[in-house]
Image (cartoon, rainbow, N blue to C red; front, side, top):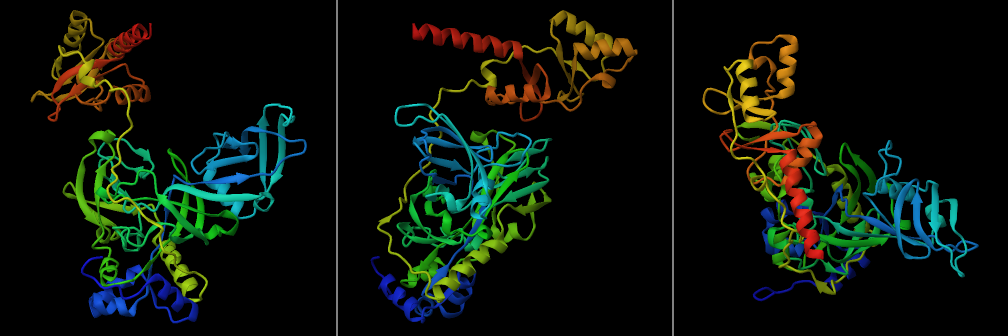
Length: 510
């Protein structure tokens, strides 16, 4: 605060809301106002900047109280429309997470859809199972409920309103299904999320006005910031919020269950946060445009620890529908809805102007130095820990007979095939040789697999196992950055390593 004079207080702004003289603009207009008037004059002209975001927020859910049954039941497990909620709280309380999947695997349905259906007033089938005690003699229960039937339905979202999101693309030769949507192979698309210039935390990056107790617009209802969200990482501009609000007051227009193909269920959440313009400094901070909001394009085709940043982009570039990546034009697609983010900001603006929404002073500032750490776990074995380094290879101009002879001499069922420049060109297996004999093929190129699934030296073994399971193969070559074969990893070697580790862990226990 040093060096600046506070021109307004939140109390003064609330007085203007009450008497109808408050001046409110949405965040996407503030940059023009500051550019035209300057920050000092803009701070005099504008009292509140409204923000908005409407995107998939997986870390969301609701606490539900069903009321006591007669005879009473102490619920151990409870399902709503075949979606299980966590019942380990109290006898008839439960927490339903947005990403919980229906037990009917054929349905693209889960917790996010149940929450939306509740707010829409739809009846839900409820099942509960408990254990019998003297005060809770009932063992199971089936009924139909609506939101109105519940005593309380309180939304508590552990992580919402990311300050910014990394954009996602995919370098591999297969489609990936992720929480960032469907990523096409070979950098054919870039998906991104967030609201750009309307992003709440980008308009208050130092959390001067957004903190514990800040009143917010949450899915059509009034809500509050509980504190910093999980994975709050302001050092890297990935701040998050934990928020709460009354589900019974929410509007299904601002809350939507959704399914990401091949990944799972989520909940689209509409959040709007008013930023009080207390001084010139806050006017400057809210004077951002999409050209000022930057993020990184990340390759999701690489293991999480090694994901490279391919380039830095602005939301202005992302929203254009096309960016340049690796020397070519790539389509960009938003997971968030800019239309709905604007609607959230506009609705919040209207409520403030009509005297229906007042601002609150945070009781505590959010942390500005928190850094997210990875999960503590045993060190994962890497490909280099298990691979065979002495690998026999065959030239792609060799005959099938030569390949068969090499296979017999090396006692290997998988032989990498190299091109003239020594790079991996394919893979031939004992099964391929058998097929060639049966069908009287003569050229190695006729029988070898040309699209070879490979591994890298530093790749976690867990990922390699998944590759093998997915493609139903038992070995794959290890290559360097120039596609030269430096080893082989097989299911046999992996089994040996796992066996050794289990034996070692057993010795430690005894």
